[in-house]
Amino acid sequence: MNNKENDFLNKRMNEGISLSLEKHLGIRKEEELFKAVREFEAKVWFNRSQMSKDKGLISRDQMPDVIKAEREFEKEYGYEEMNKEYTDFEWGELMGKLQTIRWVLGCDWGN
Image (cartoon, rainbow, N blue to C red; front, side):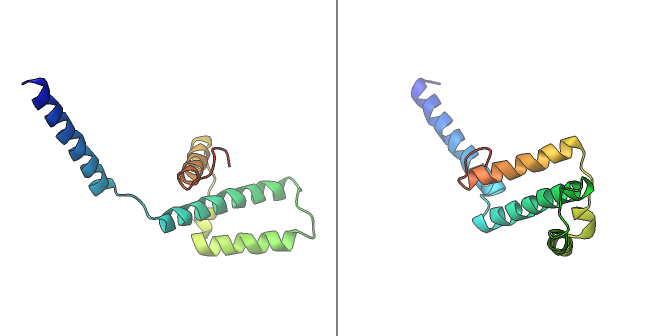
């Protein structure tokens, strides 16, 4: 096979891979990405609110609002899902997903 034929085949193969990835993986809609960000942020907030309550870092004045928000998240995402205890690996995975989706949506890394 000469270079011209090889270039042609490589180009077609790369186009095929690209089309195949788009067809099978698809590109998620913004709405789906924002929904995932909201869920991951809710889980992070909920977990941190639990730790803050345990450490006595939430004032008596703030407590009713915190409890109300926790109940709303439990209702939206499920009690078991919100009260899940994460391993270090699972916590890292959750934070990694959140940061990655934020980056795809245009945020800088770490925001």
